[in-house]
Length: 353
Image (cartoon, rainbow, N blue to C red):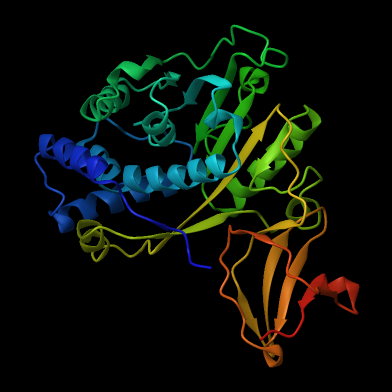
């Protein structure tokens, strides 16, 4: 199995280049751009709940050249998983999609590019962010697909709990970092698309929200493969669920990162797809929720298939170990043997080859 590799689409790169030219800077001005990114990163770290200072040129440049493309690729990975699972927001059932705290629209853009005929509503307080978002969509020829509002509410016109003819989906991309929980109206919508940073604090906040959604009869579509309590949340105070994708960086982004202390050969994020429509069962499937860990005489990898915290374990003496990646959905290997010590929660993979 190969890693999921993502590349920035050429039309997105062209749009970002055009908007940066309006800021009197080019994508190839790597050192200058890196200094702006470092400044905005410091802002986010020192004031994690503060809004992006869109009125500052450095913030616009940093966001366009760095945060927007990376967040778009994270959203693209979530969209691909939604399509693979036939999540209702990727079908004709969902007529409307609302993007809360939309910023420049990276969270909902994969949906817009694939389904431009759906109705899109964007909630964003910053006038400058709304204007930049509109320019992005205009250059992508998607400008007629959306309506903007600065009001932090959305009225669901029909009872989405029962009216399956007009499903509404809500996108919350990096929104829980600024919210205690979702706004009340979101719990009336049919589908929820949640994308958060892969930090412990944000990841566990998302797991708490998952528990709240279970009590309100939402069904979990991904990354979960079951509807039970999450073992990472219920059985640990430190674990959290997050995904990882691999990045095929364009040369200009690699050049920028050469001036930064942080690199992005892979991208991590936490996400959740939930719906009032029941998710089809994934019998015999499991999700890899950890990276492969080398230990003495064996390799282990955390998996999710139910309410217990479990690991696949390959003994080195029993043959070659397949290369599997965090986030992959796989079949349960044949001939799995439980560990004699159940406290280890290991599922031993038998001899191979």
